[in-house]
Amino acid sequence: MTPGPTHVIRCPLCSQLGKYPTVASGNTFGTVYYTDGKRVAPMLPTTPSVVRCGFCRGSFWRKAAAEVGQFTEQREEPANVDAEWLLAGYLDEPDEGEYLAAVERLISSTPAEERSIRLFTWWRGNDRHRGTSPTLGGDNPEAVNRRHDNMRALLPLLATAESADLIMRAEVLRQLGEFELATKALTRHFPAAFDTAISRLLYLCARRDSMLQKL
Ligand SMILES: [Zn+2]
Image 1: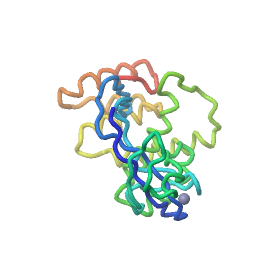
Image 2: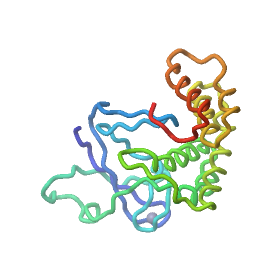
Image 3: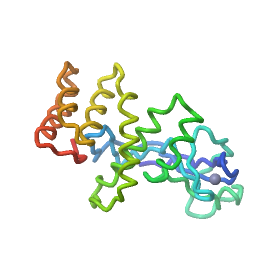
Image 4: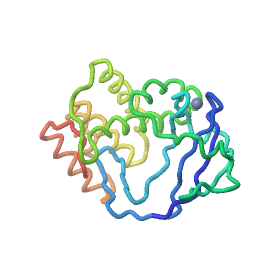
């Protein structure tokens, strides 16, 4: 994996600087695919589209922030790089609670992106079941309600002509415990490339299993 330049941007909420690294080249070795459609490629990390400011903790679209500059990270402190850039905090993806807290504001500022915002929020919530030490349970009922509200609001946004969207829609239904509706949504003609995913989802529906799984 070859690092690319680090970008410095200005938080549109508080005007403080934040930065994020980029990858110039990587590979898809070790990529894991999940039933919710998210792909995790450890050797090809992507920069989140929505980030959280380390200063004000607010979440915003990365593309909505003004870019201040770029520099190459080095082991020694590079000369002729603005000290403010070096001190700027790294921008992370919001966690599920932060997404849910910001979801209405993000949608009202970019209505065309509602599908993406709700999808990222759903995926971020599912992250608790990914990786080597998935977390089970421990969510308070209010957090579960807000998660489910977002998932239900995502359903009509995935009712498009795209097979991948329709399959993700069935997966949202399965995770909501709507196994019959999910099975019905999968029982139609899809391109052969989706056969593995569809068989897996139908099997999980038949077992009445609503957990996120690897494909
Ligand atoms: Zn900020």
